[in-house]
Length: 260
Image (cartoon, rainbow, N blue to C red; front, side, top):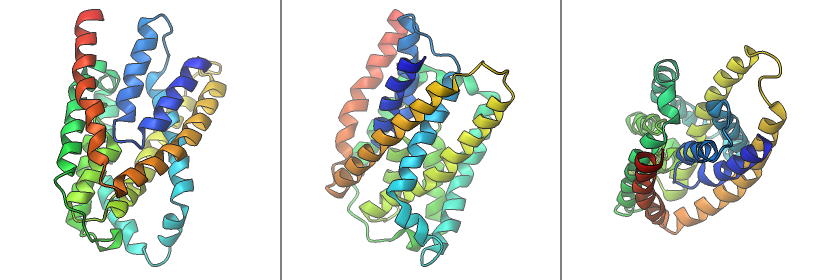
């Protein structure tokens, strides 16, 4: 399990921040391992733990912004709280009722083009002027709805929330900052729920060493990817990632139909 987890951690570290859906790539990667005789048990557990690694990357990259939440940006805490509500509601419903759907590669193939369409739409949005603390509560909720939509594998969380932030009038760098501030409670909450589930499992049923190594790798790769994304976003190049997910969606669908 160690080699497979490290490979998925590299994929996670790259795709969590680049707007191409980390969950979608992890689901497809896990399915490929299974098809070629290397199944990964507890796919959702691996997915969540690797996300926790990239959560640490967010905390390191945005530590100054997070510190400012205690001072001049205190209003942003309420905006993040409002923006988090849709993901909490949708996430709990999916975890309890439709957890298997979160591991469906066919669903990923269908959702990749949705991500691509959102990224192409971002090209039509002129740079905004608002700072995060100037965002209205309705618009914060709108960004949160896009984050909830991204719980479906194949829809990029970073892509969806950054596009929603740009549409709401945020500056490019501020849209990225608000997107990843929203990720802190979303990823942290999902990781906490999964950790509670892990505590209830029998000893030895989970390879904690492989999971810890995967989290570390996703953290290191994640810091580099986040730096890259912010630079590209500042240059207005977010839409270019659409040319990856738009063709990838039909490829995944054909693979599921013909070779699964």
